[in-house]
Amino acid sequence: MARRAGATSERIVGAAVRLFAAKGFDGTTVQEVVEAASVTKGALYHYFGSKDDLLFEIYRSLIGRQMADLDRIVAARLDAATTVRQILVSLVETTARSVDETAVFVREMHRLDADRMTTFRAERRRYHETFRAVVEQAQEAGEFSAAVPADTAVLIALGVVNQLPTWYRPDGPKSPARLGAEIADFILAGLRP
Image (cartoon, rainbow, N blue to C red; front, side, top):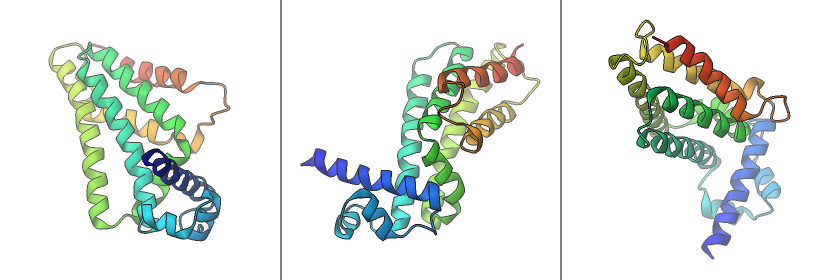
């Protein structure tokens, strides 16, 4: 039964992602989500109290995957260059696989209520601070140049990745892994001692 419940909520979220990406949050009705997910309104409201809850779930799911990947990579305690490379490739791959989710969230995040916005900011801050700590520690150890502050390097890297939904196409010439490696090469070139 738990597997079926998970499948139902995933269908609802998947339908919401597709519709929000195509029509926007305001342009999508609950009835359209229900029809696209092939569920009843009762089923939708069983899992999600509102359309806003769906929007937050889209974000929560995406950042949850990205944080789990980041934590796994950092816990491996590899050298700094390998760690930065793996962080960026993983982030690009996750973002590319979730390009509609990312686009929806970037475009609609201002709709979050104050409590959810606080949660969003705390999770994004934790990601940023964890990534920045990798760069700072490598700068202090002399593995990376300190000419560019760690915060700036991380903001540039995350800024590029956050813009993927505006220009990345899954059917384009570069795989997410290749694109991630190229972004990592660019960032690492700027950090070389």
